[in-house]
Length: 88
Image (cartoon, rainbow, N blue to C red; front, side):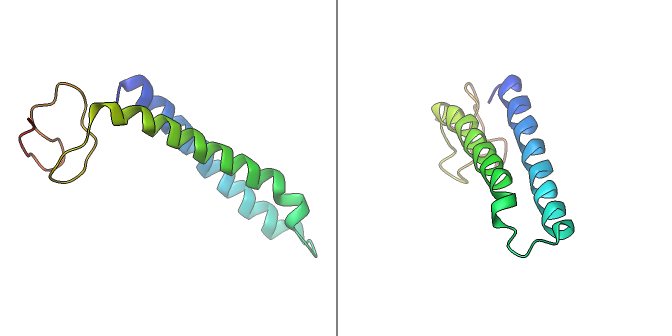
């Protein structure tokens, strides 16, 4: 995964964390009898962010995975960065 892709993923994960916090706060402070209608937009936002994170992760599958531990490999790796297994 390139540094640009890592940055994008980190940005999306931070936005997802903020959305979860916002959802919890709205639910807790809402005092709604039936909170679902008021929270649907946050549910949609969380779903969209999770999908975008999956899309970013899918772009890294082109580089392959370690046969030993399953870690995503960056192109040109000779050894796995997680378990140290020789690749190729």
